[in-house]
Length: 230
Image (tube, rainbow, N blue to C red; front, side):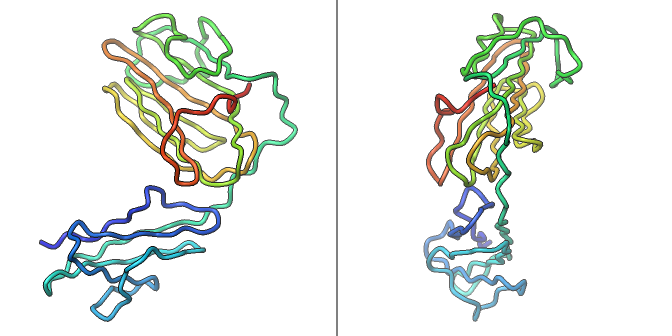
């Protein structure tokens, strides 16, 4: 009946160092942990302050309260090499290429195999570009330029489905017919340009698309103006 500890960090990847915080829902509980794969016991190190970690590490942790103990939980933080920014890429200007597709979809189709009804350039990630509120899909494609090397968190909330790809990594998969649902993903990027691809579809009823980003542990904010290119 003792609730195990949880990791305070939202993100479990890092490029250089990370300060890992563990906490308990019961503030009177004692947390002990190990980083060598052994089960935590009553003589294991006491977790008091965030631990600075420089390499991929798995922490095993357990909470004690009034002599009772929780189950052991595992948290892995992974050191990542930042994705190398694109070089010798020809940029035509600010904003993304946005293709509009007409059709009734129950999930994201293979947009590369479909013929778009129109194409525009804009730095606004808005579903208003479709010119309708039912039965369409959008493809936002181009590059995102991040100012600093580090870990970036992307958050996509959509009704209906969406998918975000950075480089060759599908970072967020939020497909299917549903109301406004947020999905998040984190990626290590070098400063500079990286391929950016956002897919979205709307069947009928409610609709919406919101994209935000966080970096260096800052709160989520809308994608800054001037980060998107084609």
